[in-house]
Length: 343
Image (tube, rainbow, N blue to C red):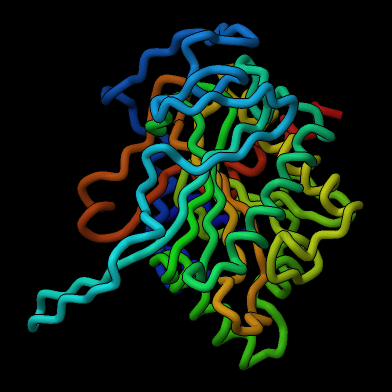
């Protein structure tokens, strides 16, 4: 391991986005006198009559949830995107706007209100993956949908308004900012090297074995070299695949295992139900071949040193560049030990 990277301030290049992150390992030793979050142990019932996501309950729209037994998907009652939005544009010098159409859905992972992905079995998580595949395909086939974003916000600290295990799917007519960056970087690399960027990146990571947390036959779980969040994790398929729709049945269970490992070690890290935002970046559904894409899933958790200390993106990070104190190698080492203890 390069000791300079562990001792001195430096910046790291994110090959997927073309951006830089400032790393300041010496700052990890500084005393903390900033904001600390309240930690209250979560004890939730398997069914909450006041929860609008529980089976059989009425939602704010007035619709009643069916008595679902595993995964349940419905159109968000308060969608951020409208599928019937008028088509228009504004182009007046530096004042520009374009209409955006889309469909937003909510996916309940389980009818059990008390669970999170960390408490679900690998088989139960596999059913979630099947539902993700179905939604990616069905939404992606729509004429006005060119990208399908699957994500989950877990925990009140991440702005999650309901603790019931659920995620969201926003599909839209244009490519969102982060996807545009990754599309550009992967396309340029693929044209130059005839291989995917993440294919070659994985070869380096496996050879170095400094940031790998867990792997099975089909997936590698690691803290990326360019990680921004303190305990950021990425799940990458070993074989290049454009989207989760290319997963074979035997690979879906291995993907479910990887998700299970990540969420379980997160909960063990500070002995709480660990908050995070997770999301899958995969090929657009814009009708192009997108052979340069190599899908992956990222987890961005905000906790820094303990269950009460949060990483805020403020000051320099808002006006200049992302910055982190704990090196990705240190974070990966901590998470790897927890992963080893699972088995």
